[in-house]
Image 1 (cartoon, rainbow over the protein chains, first blue to last red):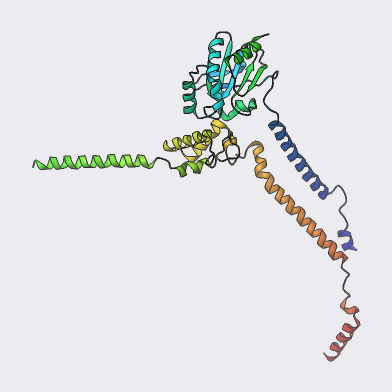
Image 2 (tube, rainbow over the protein chains, first blue to last red; image 1 turned 180 degrees about the vertical axis):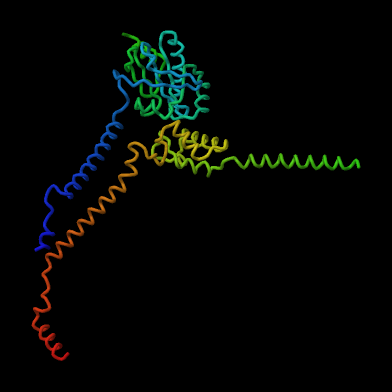
Length: 186
Length: 160
């Protein structure tokens, strides 16, 4: 009689059910984490009209630029690297555009992505680039912009919103000039 | 008597020359080898070439990174200092073994937890199957119920 009682199925609401529930919660939690990761990786770069979080760029010369303090100005952010061949196609044109707009309330920031400092500095010197450039420490800026590679260029309007996104190199100075003028327009 | 200062001077020159040679040999000895560079490089991944360890990655970016490792080693940096430098420059994702912080804990906790849960479930399933098999097996008749054994026991008792 006693044996028959011990073999009886465990009634609902006991430890076994809690164990099963725990396993399901763990599995669902894991799926949620994987889902969030998947959404983030397939999101693509930040789009036109979005307002990216401000960031601080410390240049190779040690000067700090905080984009939070640049609201009211057009800010061109160019991601590049010394090992990136397509970046070379637009390097000279970006400098020309900087020379054209530097006195018109347009700020150029070069964000050096996953690079080594000596090679990055040599690149800047080779192309005569004079606008502020600095390393993307910890790849924090590129992650915030969700860039997929280099070169990529983002132009923020005076309101701090994304006015223009260029994936890949600019093909001409005129293309850069037009993008900046469009961002300047109210 | 005049030869003694000359002798001392000659010995001094020879000693200085040997010291200089030893110094240059020591400096050459600190030049990191490819194996030393790769020992650190294989623990790092460049974000540009995902899933390819730095020691075998063929891109220019990775070659530059390996040169940086070589430079830091020649400056006397330790392996940990170099890895810390890379993390500071490029983020924790460059490490082959992610640090056990934040969501990275899942990498370390989930596999053993899944193994333990699986083992526990298997153990419980096996135990319940065995119990079910035991319950379905017909019980063997008790020895005292068998007339032959009863007769045998009576016989033994009588003789004993």
